[in-house]
Image 1 (tube, helix red, strand yellow):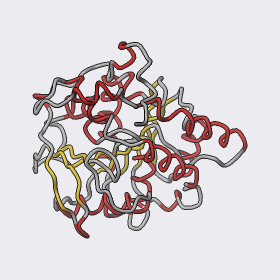
Image 2 (tube, rainbow, N blue to C red):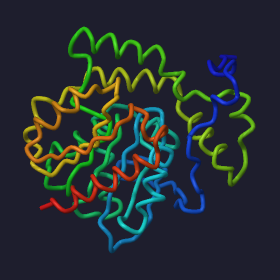
Image 3 (cartoon, rainbow, N blue to C red):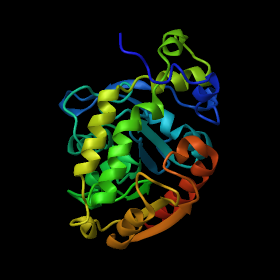
Image 4 (cartoon, helix red, strand yellow):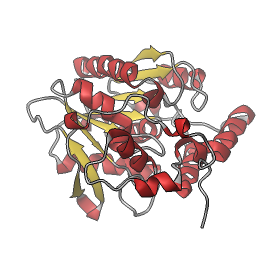
Amino acid sequence: MPTNPLTALPRAAWRLPRMAPDMSKLPTGRIVTLDDDVVTRLYDTGEEHLQPVILLHGMVATGMLNWYQTFQRLRGEYRLITYDQRHHGMGHTGPFGFQSLSEDVLRVADHLELEAPIVGGYSMGGIVAQLAARPDPSRLGGLVLAATGTGAERNALEKLTLGSLSRTSPLLNAVPDKVAREIGEEIPRPHAWALRELSSVSMATHRTVISEVGRFNSTSWLPDLDLPVAIVKTTRDIAFPQRIQDEMADLLPHSAVFPIHAGHAVCATHPGAFARRMRTAIGWAVSNAR
């Protein structure tokens, strides 16, 4: 039986996320079937009178694990929606590729009959958000791109960095097998819930996503995205260095940058500060939507 790389670490290392969610403030996820029989777990605060915001999680996370602090802090300000992307959590188990993931964004918008939603994306989710806007930017109200960029692996330094992430990514979010087996409550405690969410993403998915990031490059078509784009810039990011994020901002015709002084895992290491920065960025995108 394969061993988990974290079983030898001290118990304190398992204590993620740093700020545990208040489960009573989070909507209950439900399994939905979208067009083309795409099945996923979706969370929706459901306030139909508010501006809808679809939030796309990053690699090795799940929808609510990535965005729980944003849901807790911004609920009542926007209609917040997130879901598990393919091969993450309870996301669709069919073919995986960023293009397929971007089409799922529009499937969710159509399923919920959303008109011009704001789409926010974190890391991998930011790449997916860019692709979702590419066919017809007018379908969306705007984008919020956090801890992401135009791509990676375009020179020797980036190849080295991406290679390091490939080797170490299983350590970022792996959960000790013993702990994962112990998590079985119908309504789990917050940290038990977080560990269960983390354990739902396979190491094979880690490698697949990193490979997809290495092939992605949006520099040639970003100038065609004629919609407001707010960029939450992580200034201490190794996965997407500042210059990659700055390049994205420079190429977009209508963008604004909202820096946060943290690394790539800001949603876990500084969840409160990240949620507050998302509030500012979403507000800018909404106020500038056509």
